[in-house]
Length: 215
Image (cartoon, rainbow, N blue to C red; front, side, top):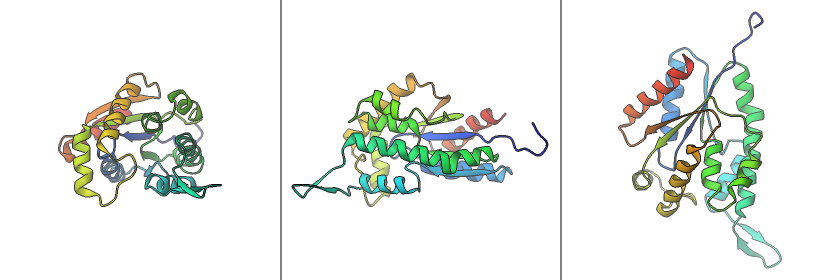
């Protein structure tokens, strides 16, 4: 390594169904890394970029008018999967990879496994895998495992609005898809943590997994 060159940062991903606590844990972990004197940046998918903003509109129920009838129609699931894949490439190119190469640890709230679990409910899983082939593998994926009933209770008590996937029947399917996909996932190291524990206990377990990675 040349003198003065920074070592590459680590790419850490938090995964889980809606209400699993990924956003809460991401913020806590970024603060913890920074408190230890490390360069750390939190990010999420859908990203804050233009494609990510469009995806969030779609997930919140914003529909498009379809000619020639002029009737309002939902966006095709395959198109949504393509948007997620396009947002991911843009996110990697313009934010994640530059940060990693500059020595920053990046903690991302959701990534490829989310697409595989969610988009495969309405689109062929092989198609979703194929369009995400350009996505780099994380150094560590942490899956916060929470029962759908528990996750939905959290959502109902803390959120005013709902996104299209935030329904119990759908979350049960997503949870099952996560279990199936992670059972054969080969995109880097995966650690599963009981996300139903007290928040501080979950945070400690996440920290331990990251300490093992950084050791």
